Length: 115
Length: 110
Image 1: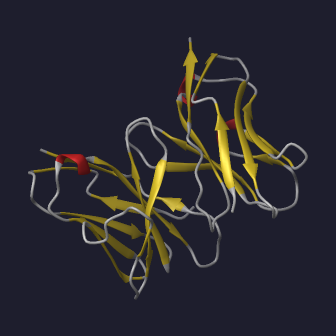
Image 2: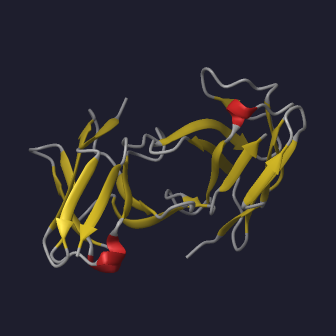
């Protein structure tokens, strides 16, 4: 099956710093990638849809200036949490959809802890 | 718009017992439906999916699900639970909506 990789898996940072999380589709090209946030014991919340070569589409209530998304190539999307605060601590998951299939493939997730 | 509802945030079964995780959908058009499993601190793994065709869908790890239009359901089952099945399970609606259910935590008791 198709593989999506996220990096880093775990990151701890100080309040006020920025953190970048990468999402790569390893063996397929994805014109569309998705970023989710998951709080403990809760479901995934779609944050934004990342489109290669264009601006991301953010879900209602998600601060686009806080969560910067860049989809510079068909295999890489990045999520940058700017000026992170403890309330941004969460599990962030990306997914990608090959152009030839309707199903999604998920990354392993990235655990962000802001001190 | 399509939405999915998972009934029961927690399900506990004994090892070897039947696993039944419930998912109902609402939609005015034929849906695509998916079940995923998530282990702690990991991403989601696709168990199975229904798009068109056969209503009984077999997935990995011995799981299967049946699409029942009359009941608007897509419940996930496994005849005999293993300890390794303990995880969080999510039902998801069609690809466009990216609508996830709230999740069901499955506990398998020895």
